[in-house]
Amino acid sequence: MLKDIKTDKAPAAIGPYSQAIQAGDFLYVSGQIPINPETGDVVEGIEKQTEQVLNNLKAILTEAGTDFSKVVKFTIFLKDMETFGTVNEIYGSFLEKPYPARATVEVARLPKDVLVEMDVIAYTK
Image (cartoon, rainbow, N blue to C red; front, top):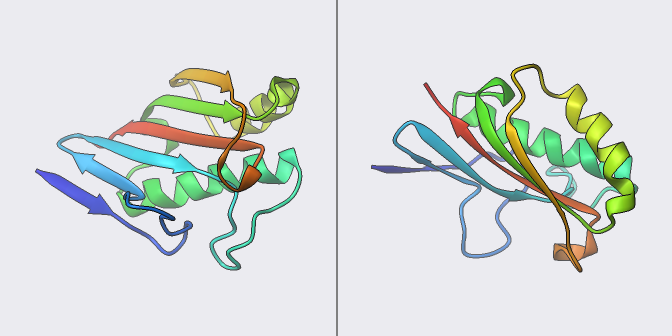
């Protein structure tokens, strides 16, 4: 059984997709970009963008009744791999051991020309 997860504490989907879908004991969270859900604006700078993305993910996880401690997989998309160190430091401040599996890739372009996007898979039990 699939369950649509939606919260107004994270940006609304800007296309034909869900913020997250729970499938059994797993939650699949769509890629989050650094849109402030209160204003609808993209925040500026890699530090603030990274924090906003992680806060958006946190809001969706919370809505689903879980948190970062249950995330098993992160995917991070960066516009510029030179920002990896900054993103990694902020990312690490949101997590505790055992850390989830992760992939980080540099991409040519992201929606709304943001600098970072992340998605997660979380275990919900």
